[in-house]
Image 1 (cartoon, rainbow, N blue to C red):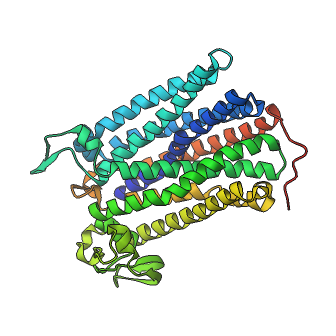
Image 2 (cartoon, rainbow, N blue to C red):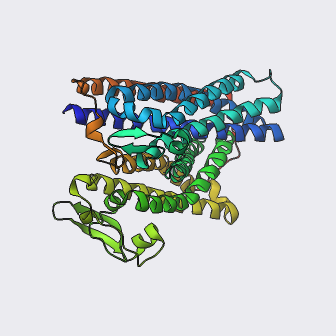
Image 3 (tube, rainbow, N blue to C red):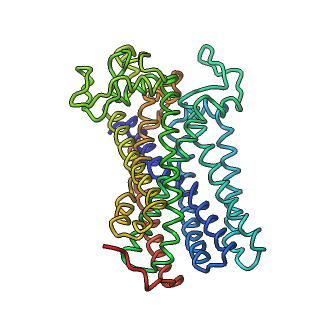
Length: 444
């Protein structure tokens, strides 16, 4: 493994781990706040126990997310010094604001965790809500920085110099809204289905059924709303990518020929040498419609883009196909949930129905990982789209491969610790909040 590949692999591995912590940090505080709100309105002790249980999980993941985020900030300077030298003054503002949001989140979380029976009930609830809002802001600000890499703005690039820097324009670049919306909905869907699936499994095992049923309802409803809205944000993102990054769109769809009524490709095996895609299902005109809102408008193919500016077509295409497939499966499950909620309430306690949510537990996070592969790999060979190539930004320091092994070991250890702590927390839930409903009998 050469140093360039090691640097990219280390960044990919680090982002792959951190994005899970980031999604949880954006979403779980809101679940905690919803449960707390229901408790304050109803006085039901189940929701007090649920709020306390979730808050401890939030604390565990907040700490690990802080560690992984700090490591990422060091990696940016360590692995990509040329990029940070030029880009830092331009897109540094969202990172600075993200740091502020992080500190607010930490302070509010401390108030919430130690505020039980010490703060006025509704003020205590507000501190939990602030945890969620600041966590959401942190995620959006980091996505804004990433969006700048896809749609650089806020400066003039003249003779290799970055002049007339405007940090506000850089932060609110053309891609920030579509990426922030898509990522926020993805975080709610992925985390919601993961949480709902875990609690559905506990219901199936008949452990603390009333407690886990309350948790399942909050998580499932949030996840299903986000999943149904996600295709809308996907359409917004597709139109934005078609306008700014035609090479990325072409790689996503393994679209080689520029043509009107461009087909949307389902499946298929791209052949970059032959510049074709095999064994694909093609829906005529749909790609043109998704990209431009007009089935007759041409979509640029890879053949009209210099080959040294092509992203890795196969990786981008397979990641996009995986993301879309899992996303549509979650949409179908969401529609089934809404049907059950309004027309077939008996399904909500049926074993087959709960098993569907258990199966869906990892799907959202797999889709999130695939989506980030599309975003990052699809931008290659650029680290700043159209301005700086990734190969020109990498550190000249030798021996990066050893750093890759070291950071991989740290992240694997961190993940093992998180799994252990969350597993122990789940076991403690059964002992501390034993509110099992013995009359609950899931249907076969």
